[in-house]
Length: 215
Image (spheres, helix red, strand yellow):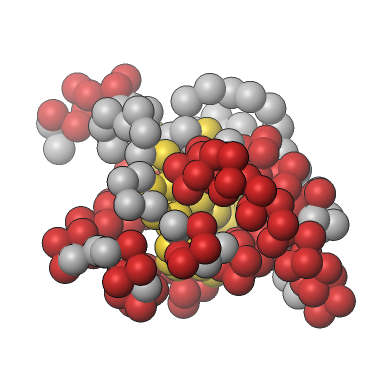
């Protein structure tokens, strides 16, 4: 994982107003239509796995730059503007209860990408494994409440976000299948956070290999 910068993600409980969501949808659709034309579905996944690009997109679409909603609201917008039949991508999961509905969302659009049952089972297992890594193997005090999986015919990316209610901050985790060699040895594409804690148990790093052998 590379340390590329700092994002301010304080927890905000209010909802984005309808007029803003409407404008975000109108602005976002042509961006992804053009991006698909030039870079294809895998290019879109690569873009969304980049913390800077993801954060910048939320700002370009008019959302507040210093908010946990950059992740959740943008995730909701992406689910509406990115269509399997138009962009060759399925976006599954989301915030809260939707985070656990990855399999359901994949099944709904499986025929569009010619997925079979084995494909769905494999992607669902990856979804659960990634969530488990960021919720259990990486014990940093942030509990996941958002899980968004973006899949093409041959690649996937995941954007998760956790919250720490004590300090009222959020932390975003980005995953990308391309170049991923291990789910437990520094697997993240990037992590967006402004908070660095002194006491964190990270079992998802090669430095913890000896510790894992004794579990």
